[in-house]
Image 1: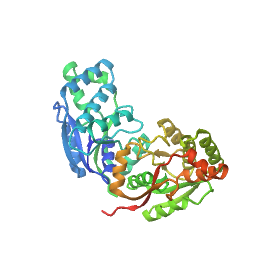
Image 2: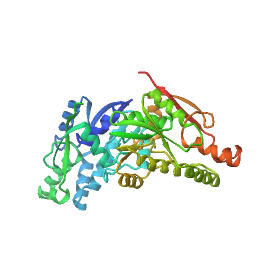
Image 3: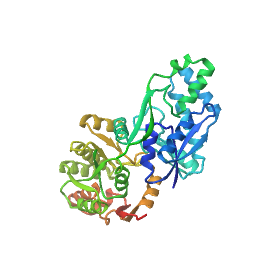
Image 4: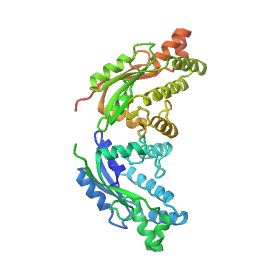
Length: 198
Length: 198
């Protein structure tokens, strides 16, 4: 069965790929709005890990709506959630038997409720699976430590390909770089550099 | 990391074991109340699949309370839920770094909420993981078809080791065999007989 997994190059979506690869033919799929080239970081990591990779074109209007929402809210949660739902809809419409993402049990964003999952499945005739949704933060961190080589750094410096990079670029373009600090909390991001040797 | 997985010999808990074995040292653990010998079916399947196996002693008082509840309700859901929570508490108190069960996204029973999961983790200092909780019924069925050899039959004939067998025995003992039909709906159960060759 062919499965497309929404992929950022971060530890969660990489761990999800490793959990699924025993059971599915996994393609790592990175959504992009055509605003920055950050998706290439995910392609590079996918290649290093030996996974097939595809780009998924997302609607730039959704990115601009999400950026507006983030500036209004003063925090990124709701905007990121909008973008994630849009990406899942696009992925569900592509040619996969099953789709997946790296959402965890304890995540505040993005979240996919059981009703949203079933709706996605019924409307598109695909299985939606969230292999990390039964794992809490501590369990994921322990599995990552045991399995992956990761780089950790501040969000703005780490090379990865989640939605934040393009949304930050829009906000910087519209409201100046200083607006980013008003909307996004400082936190460290991780980027996967490889799988540990046994 | 040592992980104990609540195991019935059925397809869900077997699939959960296969998902986890890449990341944990998995022991299949079957709860029993000392009422019937049905746990031996799970031990046999665990051995066939090459997993370590342990019995987990459960409190017979909990079984009798659950059987009373099932007779009062006229359906098994709440009684099974009581037993499952008791089994998770016992398992969390055992010597594992992580514990798990085979609950699925679309299951009505047993269910473990995020709050219950976090409480179990905090009180016992273990990770609780539910590897199938991000998979819907159709996705699980497709993975089972692709991965496992299973036998399907009516609940009362199939040899497996979920809580139902012992609860049925209590109810038959207390209220006669005809009481079982009043409390448990007719449905087919599955029992795993092996892993498919590639």
